[in-house]
Length: 156
Image 1 (spheres, rainbow, N blue to C red):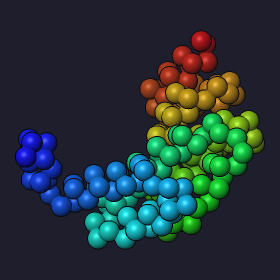
Image 2: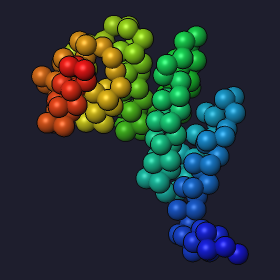
Image 3: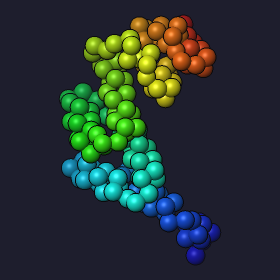
């Protein structure tokens, strides 16, 4: 037994399940993804389960975000069906959809950007190329860090 195996065996059950869920979610087939997300969310430790799912949602959304062809939208609808009863996951998915709209140069509302979470505003300031969004975040971002990041990217 390696020290890594010993560490894994001595970890509390929820830590082992969390790691197992992340591994399974990382390799799940597209057609099985929604079912696996639903299974994870039925775990008795709701906080741990939601943490695993939000990490997966973030990873998967980032992969799909730049793709054309509707893959992101199909995936987002499937995830919304499985996570719609959970406020945090619903908000995160909504913010990924907003980021998608901005990225694909589709309509978005300034109020959505300015009232979005710190996570969204940081992510947008770091990733979007829209000068309108960067200008908005540079002026009205929630934190000094967000305003500075948006301003820096805007002037590059």
